[in-house]
Amino acid sequence: MFFMKHSFIEDIELGSKNALMKIRIISYYINNGENSLADLGREMDLTVPTVTKLVGELIDDGYVIDFGKQETNGGRRPNIYGLNPNSGYFVGVDIKHFRINMALINFKGDLMQTKTDIPFHYENTQANLESLCDLIEEFISGLNV
Image (tube, rainbow, N blue to C red; front, side, top):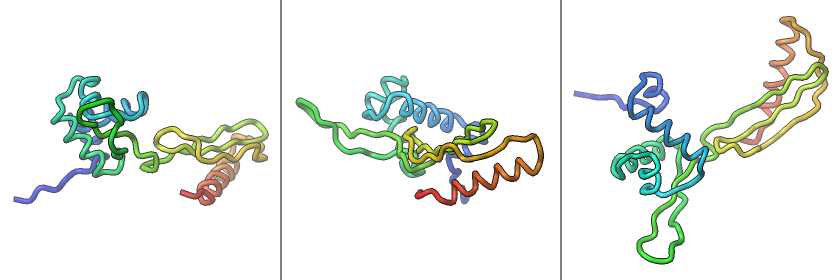
């Protein structure tokens, strides 16, 4: 029998338990930064094998990366894992009455690029919405990602 592997996004749409735990892991990394698997498991009340499996799947999907060994005073040095900043990007658009500001941030929340004080006269019309969409598409097409 053939079983097709679901992607992380498909698992989220299905509401699977693993997807919810992966979302918790990503949220943890967003709020707390990089950490070892043992510390992540302790913080999230999950076993190390469960965390290892879930983080491994997030690595396979490109959302998490291994930053290498942590420096310690003794004992075995654990690997540190965290968000892959290039796994996703977000565009923010701040619409004012006579101008707009746009920014791109990476998956970790680092500001990558901005374009500010773009002349734009806000009106509640279809033509104005299309003009705004054109400006946003122009911003996105000029990004170096």
